[in-house]
Image (cartoon, rainbow, N blue to C red; front, side, top):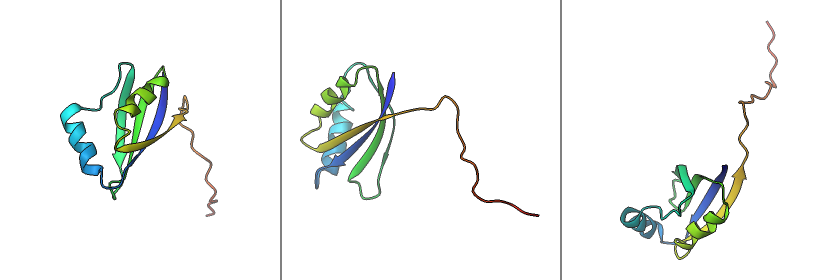
Length: 94
């Protein structure tokens, strides 16, 4: 399965409508598309969601349920097999 970062841009003045639909109907995800986590910005005009699916075409099906209120972008996320920590650019001297 592949992980995707979905960026939702709420149409002007639609934040409350988005969450009203969500509270009444849920995420409206097609079978095979899985929600992992989400975050919203302070201004309530952006939402970032991590999703997983083996079929990226399911994202378009999901977007269709919300296109009257939201514009979408999505990006594949590569997940490293082990965490990588960049080397420190600071040198310490004693």
